[in-house]
Image 1: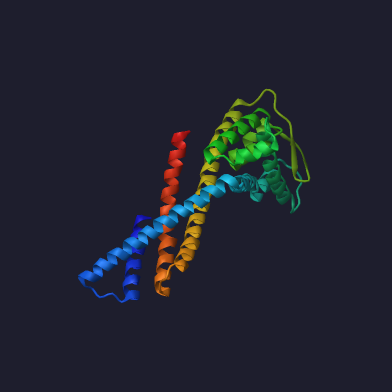
Image 2: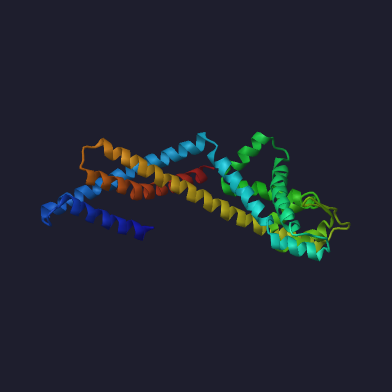
Length: 284
């Protein structure tokens, strides 16, 4: 990122030189230095404004809760929706199948896993509280998912799809040992728990769920950071363009200030937001 910023800064300065037709004299370099600091100062102000706007939107609108809930459910669903896995499973279970059976199970398992996650998360929560859970920072959200996984492990016959989503397709055989399938209807698999419990299968599934939750945290965390940074860059560009229109400048200079706000304003917005996040963690 630093290298990119340096390249863009050099390009910005060259564009400024060309558009202003400044001669390479000591006075010209003084003017160039003044203009460069003016651009950077403008970008810092725009970056701060973008960061403040993003933070306000996060605090007063349920944006984070809505996005993280969608991303988590998509991740959970995708981990179950593997048609090849279910085609092989049907063959191993010696269950009669037609061309649509694997897809039907894949779709049903994906839907069931998302429903089971909400049911396990609800526990002592109301639905309003559940929205607040999805509004948590990703590490705290995944801590709640981890608690839901522990609850699911205590009833593998009721939460087999959720366990499969968290542990991954490689643990399907172990889940079958914990909760053997007894029937498949409309893609839904009815299961019953084994007694006594298979401790080796339980350990494998428990290990898989921990690894899966780590992957979930990485996936959702990266998507959230990209979204926030993208919003900061977009707002910086919009604020920069609006600010440039308010100043009596030539068209080329306005374009230059808008470009500086878009690139450097977005960069400074990221830096300010990261510093704010560090301060929030220290305050906790």
